[in-house]
Amino acid sequence: MPETNKLRSTALAWLGRQEYSQHKFCEKLKKYEATEEQIELILEEFCQNKWLCEQRYCDAYVRGRVNKGQGKIRIKADARNKRLDQDKVNQSLSEVDVDWFEQARGTYEKRFGDLPIKDIKDKAKRLRFMQYRGFTMDEVNFAMNNDDDE
Image (cartoon, rainbow, N blue to C red; front, top):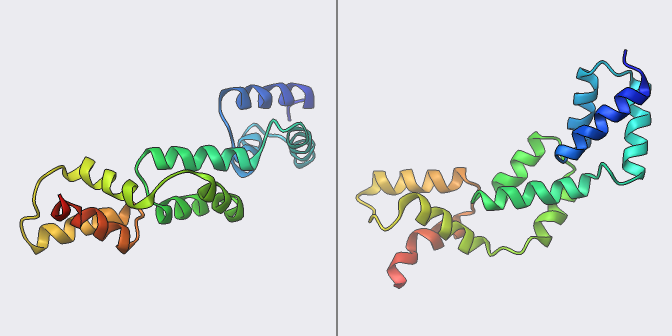
């Protein structure tokens, strides 16, 4: 069991390098063999001083996923798997300035470029890819049919 001051310094150094969700931060402290009491004290202090902020982490997480070309559905599902607060994730999603239809088109064009759809099998493959990336059917149809408008 490490002493509390040393553990506190180490934990602060972790936060200096990257943002953490509270769940991930607790896991990291547990791996460092901190007691439940130490974890509770550190979490309380860090949250009070706003060194550890779940909303800030959710904002950064959502921005990162949007930059990777993912859709709302995928972002929400991955956030749920990471045990992030869904209300905070939804708030971050509503605050991010993105047109999800344009996001879908950008992701589609990055993956498939100007290549025309060869057959039904190719269309199904593209559809599965876009759904895996977390886009709704309306967004996928917009991205796939956008070539007809030009």
